[in-house]
Length: 538
Ligand code: HEM
Image (spheres, rainbow, N blue to C red):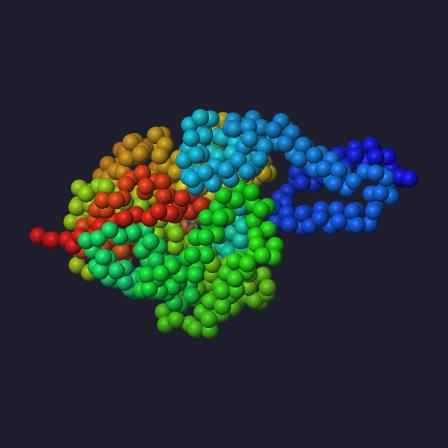
């Protein structure tokens, strides 16, 4: 005997799926709850099967069949809604992109060249492309102030929840709280604080010089050594000790874990609901748990050992100690420790690699740059900051190869955002692909060519400089920009004053470009083989 007819229960199952989507999942963000939702499904299914509940209710209907109808209702409703009723439906783009965020993941995973794939979509569909069900890629230079500018009404998107429960300054989505924390970071990068960091930067520059002197005349993978340089500096300025990679010549635990995670998780950054599984499911989370245990140990050691001269962590600890030191404060502290190393390393290393690639391809410009550098005897940070050609080369490198090539995710405010004639509805994800934008004819003449002079003697080659934001802009712009520039200038000056550079015979342009990987920041998977030759000065 059955309590309900099998037919009506099938209908209820289907309708329950539709209702779950329309009245619950369609509203708000559920990414962080994904493991809990899946766990509930498993529990209910097990209970239904284990207690013969279904048999009592419907006789012959099986739990798996009803679950099937429920899921059909749920996913059917999601697809129909996204394709035909969603507020972004009028924006052009591949049909699949509008239906599932896995499309953007597919673009990311395909050779890790999302910046190029998205560029192709813009050439096909125009400035506004629907890249995901709730996501727009915007390549309109006019949109920059509305999405990233100091007075933009946008907030950071769900991508930033990827580090939950650890919330760093970078991943803090609460604007007020972020502004409070940002003041601490701004102290850590004040002009005075930077002077404390200068001797450390010089020390690691000298270590890298020593490595280069041993390998001069032979092909050398500089991408690897620039990574060691930037990571060792950030280790020193955060944990009070270098990772010693410039000395040992081996990858540290931090670098290999970070790069491993970026490779495996990079493609999932558009489907953030998957990330919590990697943190909470036993077995899957082994590397995650081990990493944070290691990080806690480093923070603990650093907290008990104050360095002679203040470092970045001095400021973060000071703020932490002035607070109640609640569990939340501890999550902030450890989130910030990770951020300091992560934000400061790959970005700087990738920029150095790209800079040296461009310089090796521009011998005439590099010779002039060397002459400029030769005017300084023992260059200080302040003096290096005045080198016109050096600064122009860095700017031009970041234009052609932005360290965050696909831009930064933001959410539009409830009232939406208007850019000229285009209205972007509220509560949508927007992202400006910096790689595409910085190579836009509307912003720069000869946009694909490396012409540093556009930033010095030939400003007419810049049509719209306001779109150029390699360090971001507004309240969430890069906190460590001046440290990054100090590191880049120091090692560039030290190397170019002693060495000429050239691509090694084996290094092709294709391999260099193919090896660039977009995993939120840009990394050089295949490296860059350069040959350093001692300079013969007149
Ligand atoms: C060439 C090197 C660098 C580039 C191109 C760069 C670029 C950027 C960009 C575009 C952002 C905005 C990210 C977003 O909105 O999601 C950012 C944020 C940030 N960067 Fe950098 N960065 C570089 C080096 C550094 C260094 C050396 C540090 C030192 C720790 C650093 C610390 C930070 C921090 C703390 C944030 C978060 C700021 C906030 O949310 O208020 N960066 N960076």
